[in-house]
Image 1 (cartoon, rainbow, N blue to C red):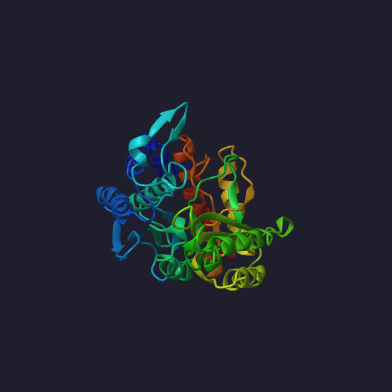
Image 2: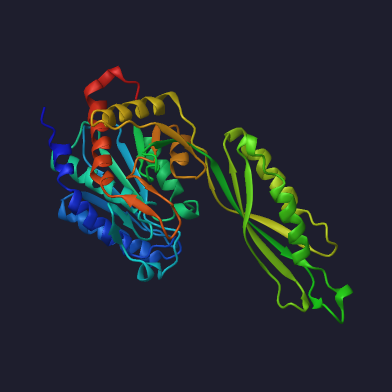
Length: 388
């Protein structure tokens, strides 16, 4: 039977690559609002060219949220497609290593995580708009701050998720070709320590070292790691001090906390707070600030049913897909916590995320778009035979 949506998507591979090149060649670090919004501007041009309705939700400090709407049956709950425009790479990275193709793979900043997912979602939305939509409306969210915990867009994502029937989060597919059915939760914290400055030679005893206090805390924080429970604590950034011959009056660190089970969250953060807020070097003080947080993604009965339908759609094209656990966090955790069935990592296949040698498998662009399109069509054809 003819399927105009997937037939059209299969013909768009070269156009997808062109749009991907444009997006990758825009610096869009999470804190570079201008760059992140420039990615949204290019996407708006795409949607205007395909007569797809969109709106911009303005945000003050982080990239605006681009919301795209494809109309569907009256009263039906929408299907949600999500993706983030920001990357971890600093502004100026594109000049050093712009988009390029080698041996069937694409390279460049954000070429896997997750600009190809944006391209894929854009073309899926355009395809359903072009061929008359679906009984369910479709909403695409293109956010700008996921790499720092989605502090500005989280409420928007959750609000859309609560209205949605189900969601696809188009983070990169795993290097194995699998998608993600489970993710760790994550909490990103900043610990600040204050001490008393003094000349380290002439008045050492008058000083109170913030660096010494921080060093003790780092040892205690890393000791909280329990690999068998999936709990890790990593101090990834440190700073402090004024000069080598000054007892340090200040020191800071950034802490990454990861965990699997939602019920472990309060215990972990309580232990971290105790370490960061209680000092052992006399005359020092310290505080802890939570900068961002992701919920874990754990499968539900409905999300596993969605996963099964997706795998069936891929199998029709001879592709076998399984679910994987990822230690990385994503907006899919917010969606799942809102009670909405979601599968993640359904974007094009890629690897070496956050690294200079990050890559994306080109042929998976249109292929993965078709898998989602067929999943959406299967949901409609099964009607009341599915609990989704």
